[in-house]
Length: 386
Image (cartoon, rainbow, N blue to C red):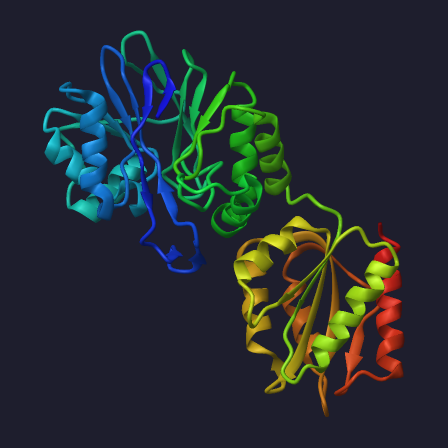
C-alpha cells in the first residue's frame, strides 16, 4: 500500500489472535502496522509482533527492492510492535535503531541489549534528516506506555501516531471505525486522558493530512472526525446522549426490573437506552458504552452480603479506566438483606465528578408495586436530564 509517493505500508494482519492483550475479544483479528519512508536514507517505522516477523521482513524486502534501510524508528516497545526489533537488527546489521531512552531500556529487558553501538536516542523536538525529508519527534508519554514517541513528516504532512487513533480489527476486514476504535481507546488508552489531551494540543500545531497509526487503517479523509472523537474521549465528555443500564441477574427478577426501566425511559423519550448483561456480554463493550453515554444505571443482586461478582468486576474496570463526569443510578435486589447498592456506591464514589441520581431502586425478590413506583421515579429523573 502506498501512503504517499515515498511512504509505503508493510504491516501484517493477525487472524490467529483470539484475545488482544489477553482480554479483549477481537473477532476480526488485529493489524500490526509498519511503514517505510524512502528517501536518500530509508527509515522503517516500527516492527510487528514476533509471530509475524518473517512475513514483515518479506514485506520490507519487497518494498526495498534491494536497498538496505538506514534506520528503524521504534515509537512504541509493546511486544505487538517491538517484538521483531531484534529480527530486523539481525537482518540489517548496518541499520541504526532510533527510539526514546525508555524504549531502549525496554529493548534491553526484552532482547538483552540496548543496541548501544547502533542507536540514536531521541526526545521531544529532535529531528532526523533522511535527505529531502526531515522527521520530527513528539513525546507522547503514557499514550499509552511511558516510552512512546510520535513522528511527524512535515514534507508529506504525515503523523505516525503510535497506538493513538488505532482500532481493533485486521485491515482485510470491512467494519465501522468508530465502534472498534472506541472500544480500543477506552480499553487500552482511556485511563490516560490527560496525557492524550497534551498530545492533541501538540498535534493541533502541526499541519496533518494523514495519520498512520500502529493498529487500524491509515486515516487521510475527514480527519476532523477522528480528532474530534479523540478530543471527546480524552476529555471524558459525553459522545452520545443516553442511558446505559448494566446489570446482573440470578433468577430473572433484576432483569425484569431492568427491562421495565428501559421501557419507561423509552416511553419518556430518552434518546438512547443500552442494556447489557454483565455476566454474558462483553464487558469491554459495556465499558465503551459507559464512557460513550452520559448516564449509567448499575443494577445487581446482593451476593454473599455484597456485590454480585460480574458487577464487581465491571466496577473495577470503570475504576481502572478513570471513569468520570457521569450520572450514576443504583438498583439493587436482595431477598432478605439488600446490600449491593451500598457497596456499589462506596466503590463509585472513588470516581471523579460522579453525580448520583436521587432516585434509587430496591427490590426484595420479584417486582412489586413499591419497586415499580421506584422505577417510575428513576425513569422520570433520568429522562428530565435530556
